[in-house]
Image (tube, rainbow, N blue to C red; front, top):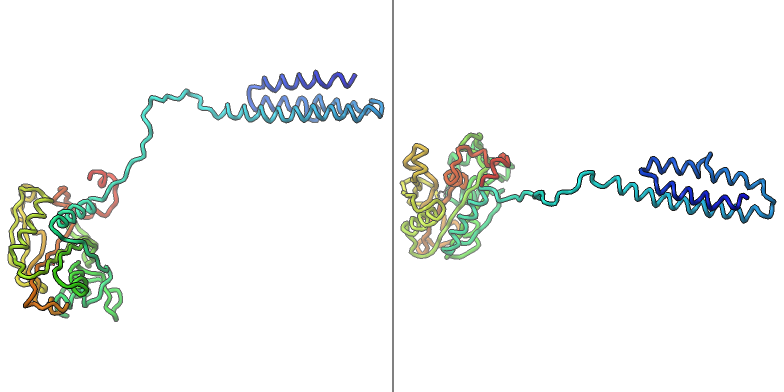
Length: 333
Ligand code: DAH
């Protein structure tokens, strides 16, 4: 009887698909029962031989069995695919984990932050100004005349010849911007990027960083300047360093000095003294430009390159290393 064949055939199919070891074998089983030449297909074909009134009931049973088989096949396929996706080797939970490497601050940022921290201890605050400047704030207000060589287009990046917009050549322009807005006392430091038309070599780069300092109050002296600079540089580079002031010329200070420093490191570099900064007492003309009475107020200012300090601190002999973003270099700091 056709009716009696359905259940055993289904059981045989279920047993076979449970035993299928992989998806290929499962496909084989599916073909054997449900394919064009499959055993259930053959049963269907025999339906025609049954008396007409029995056909619907038997047909329904065959279809039910086929549907059951289809879902068992799908279930088994998922099972086999999961099994295939499992790692072949057992997992060794005692192996070290994979660590994501942490980034860190750039050496120039570290040096800047250390300098800022030292100045904060003695009451200075950080000020900021634009990198795109005008000639007035970069030069004129700093008592730098129109024919000064620093203003030459050979030395300065001008953005627009008519309006004379330029990339600031030093952070000194921020002295002016702060004093224009604020009455004394002023105690600021200004870390920031500056731009000059230099060809890159071991000690020059057209973009570099400076820190400017400005202190204005009544009765400020060169002694205050020297004491402050000494305090900060000793914090930064160690008690073993020596500092000296050497007369120099800047148009926005009078008197003006260059600051040299000496340490076991500079001696290793073959130099007793290395110049690191410019400074001086703020010129009366600068005070007049910002509306401060030079008879009432006195002050000092300084500016130095951050790269220079970082090179001394970390014993680096080429400034360009700071900008190449080579992680083998950066990782060392
Ligand atoms: N602006 C000078 C430079 O870029 C550095 C400097 C010298 C800044 C003397 C000052 C100063 O504030 O008083 O070389």
